[in-house]
Length: 80
Image (cartoon, rainbow, N blue to C red; front, side, top):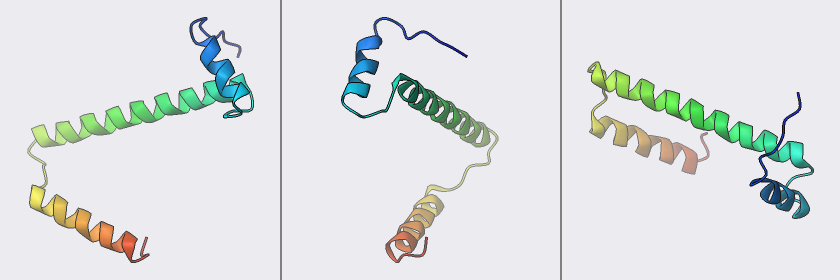
């Protein structure tokens, strides 16, 4: 598959390569697609969460904070 970089983005892509942030233009485009994929995955997960809340499947905030604190302690203690 071949694609054309929009002319307004060409300087940015060239700068990323010239600054050695990426090896070539294809790597810049691939990273952009990975970020777009991550964004869409996050959007889907957020929608799922709101759908669960709308269906009354929420978790009390106190439980969320307690679980977060427990997880932080696990990480700090090296129990990842």
